[in-house]
Image (cartoon, rainbow, N blue to C red; front, side):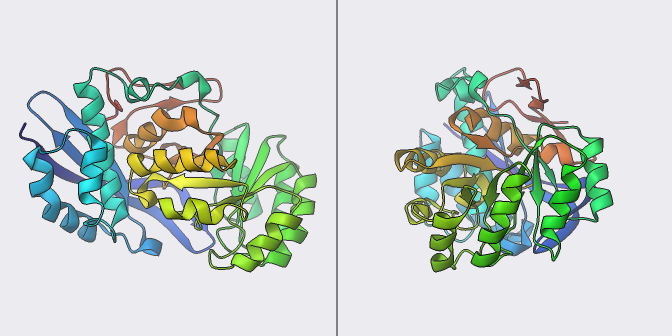
Length: 338
């Protein structure tokens, strides 16, 4: 069956400057991939990321060079397409994610099912997403919390005043806190901070140390008062096993892993090792966020607030509130461009 591959570049303006330990941004650019047959189309997405060297140019170039394989139609499932592209996209997993996501959207539509239905998942099992508060002045961080009253906040840290930030934020809300240091601490800091953070209602610490500090993570894993979650230390499938015994949980990012196909395998492997699982976002539009929502019933935690951080979303998809998750009508992933 002949297929057609196309892509669109979109700018995603943020409501507020978004700052983490190693970068700040006001606009996030993103690549939308469209895969269509004679009857249906599927959409996928990957944002760019300078930290990982992923740009619109290198993503579109690698997708263009893979076009003959995609459009040949000589594959039947998204898993088959992913396997065909495994070596081709080895250095550009973000691009493979966008293609894989579009393939899943198209495939489920061809099957006449929503993606979560095809995967035999129940939306009632979706954990509530956290809402992310980027690094800023305490006053602005408090204002962001008041702007979006949410039961769980993920607080970005990695400053000289991290404990003071949490002390001040705690004065303004009873919501659960999760903190993400994005590799900014030493083992000694992480262990010392964990006891204070626990007093302030922090649920877990995400990626406190640099990913190559394995000896430090062994120490933190044993001595921390809080569970620790891998992010930068768990990018691809082979990382899951390496994180066992260093982290209590993993945060899988679809774009870093290369899409839904490897993410599902990573989640299963982590569960088999007794680790908790999370899928996180990279400030995608409603295309990428809706895809995350479809696999979220598998997870213990989820971070799918990306579209909520935008001042303009070029797509429509899942609607998220503290009370419910509303999927768009139609089969597949179901997101669409406005």
